[in-house]
Length: 183
Image 1 (tube, helix red, strand yellow):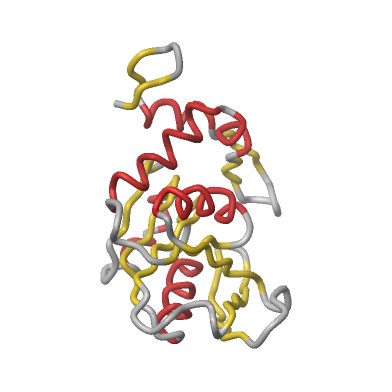
Image 2 (cartoon, one colour; image 1 turned 60 degrees about the horizontal axis):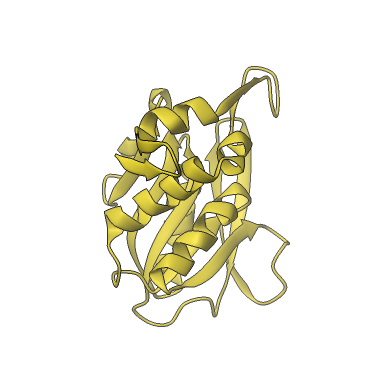
């Protein structure tokens, strides 16, 4: 239970569920998009989610926090701040200005390529990956592969929402996976 401003104890899982909006047929027909913008607009829910991620991993365990484009950036940046760690964006191909590593992967509805700057990590950096939704696991797996290729260590992956019906956990068995809610 987290403490809400003027509310007393809150059920964080329930609050997150209440603040995630389902948007049918976005970005294409047949996809049920999990929109976290209502959660981000609610200070108690947003702060509770960030605090839960930080508490799970523990201070002093992370050198860098990776946010995956684009909603992962929003969550990862305050997590990095709380850890006193650096923030590293992992972006879609062609969005970063310097030399990059790249990794392609499959999504629910197509393929994508992610990139990270070659100089984003120091040797042995301990890196936490943060994103909004875990669907097939392709994005998380590609991100972890990029981090390892750059010479850093992945200490875990934290997400707000796991779409359990897509069975991403089976692709991420080697990772410390932290999920705030599972649907």
